[in-house]
Image 1 (cartoon, helix red, strand yellow):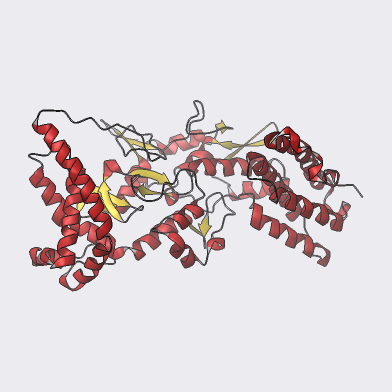
Image 2 (cartoon, rainbow, N blue to C red):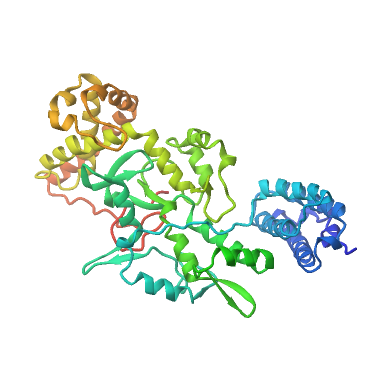
Length: 474
């Protein structure tokens, strides 16, 4: 029987720590990586029947535990990926005999910790056709015949970006137009819902954000392609799943991803939403499940609604739950959980913020954001205090249905009062701060000092349209 190369890499601690932690890790990688790759090639070539299964399990388990003991680093990530490839080729060659059951169980245990080699998603929804570029069908046909090997948002030759719908005067991101259709404030067409804090913001203050970061998506796509070139069984499975989509190209016996493959996943509206960058928990490139768990609006409540973190399925490129993309699931839960509060935001925007802003427009040329904060806080105090706002609204307005799951009327003003009262302390601090800034700005304008212009900064996650958007969070 052939001997596994990984059997010769133990023990791990034979490299002197005196050379420094990073050099020690690199030395481990240079010794372990070729051994794993050699064994993967041997299993693909010779099949499992040629190996001692018990010995394979012993060495694979030792390797699994040894890598787990390493500190978090790029070296550990690279080794975990190779173990995922090892497990993939083993799992694809397991039969149903009793002798293979323990090895199958070991593979499952490793995958629960190190993850799975990602597969294609069953569905990658794109923006509605009315928002796509006018020549989109022609473009994607061309993209299916263009190989991309190292795509990225900052790449010169393989730059990944949002589709754009161009008019005679401006180009708008297709995903932004699609999200506006879903989450625009029906009481104010210039605002849309932010999933950072269940409130509505001016369109220019909202960024289009990937729940699952775009860099992570690209990394998982590249891992899928690498696995296709390692394991013919996996390659045939992915080619069958991706049939007709134009995601893969073959050249000189190797599989490559097409421009269409990367562009469509980047523009998947099921993984996108609006965030107000100045609120909520900074997101950056965090694991989406960890970010949701830390975010005060989602937290454990959302994960408990799924059945826990382990209920999130990470076997596809884009994470899912019960076949639904994770971001879509999160958005639906958000609307159901904060329906009343979202309706309050719509109501205040229509009956408080906008009238106040219109009255202030003649004298205020740079403090609209401050006016908005003060107006909403004044409304919160009114509702929580004596329901003055409820008595002030017309009967038509107070009985109008705002939002799909909530209604603004005298009967539920008490509930709204509770919501707003619970945030009185936070709102009070905001008012103290913003009022001082507003008064200072007004004083400068009175003496003729010009207000400093706001920086025109791209969205933190993306912006390829050239439109003005919110500031980048730290």
